[in-house]
Length: 307
Image 1 (cartoon, rainbow, N blue to C red):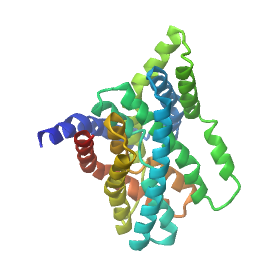
Image 2: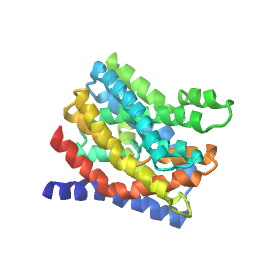
Image 3: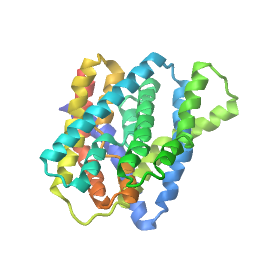
Image 4: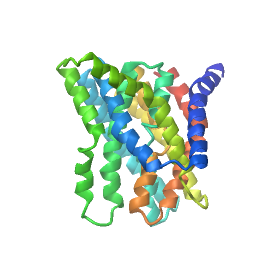
């Protein structure tokens, strides 16, 4: 019990405080949320990803193994969420949004700070987190757009558009420079280090502003069902799969904790553009984010004691 309370006060509370500051600031000042989002995607996240991969002793065979695990886990999550959506009587127009809430979890804005606090800024644990962040961005802006867009025009452009994003080059160059042991001048490293250090506070603040911008008028029971799937069933699925793949230690802990993150704000952003009922996605994002304050500490406790 004392360990659970420690997690609650030393991991979840600091995160909640900064998110709340962002939430209140957005309500008071009406900040330009799209600009903040662009700032995160094009400036903070690429620098953060590059530095973590550049400075970490990476086992590239382990990297491929993690990606294989994440792909298989995404397929299983998709199948399970589709079955539950059918059983729960989810409307046809909501089934994709229901499923996306399980597939797209907040590995970046929420998962990165949790990882940093749980593992006390361990670079190896953060490198696992970075891989999950990139994987989530890839499926959100490729598959996520594919299934919600009603027209063929623009789908492949959306997929190719990912490879124009600075996040991709932060990943690619970080791995490339690490593998070939490329040295960088000290002024460049210092600049990138400042960006990396700004990451946690900024992304949590931006998450608060994004949540403040989510608008919905009602709470539907199937949205509660989607929230339960995301916060409880998806992490429960990850546990036996990690054991089956014989993943253990920090890698297993980081993966399990990240699968417990709430539905990604990206699922709501994509729904705003491509869905006829974006409010449904907003309901799931809001509920899963609020209730994760209870479920995430439980999963952290489980991960740290099982692996």
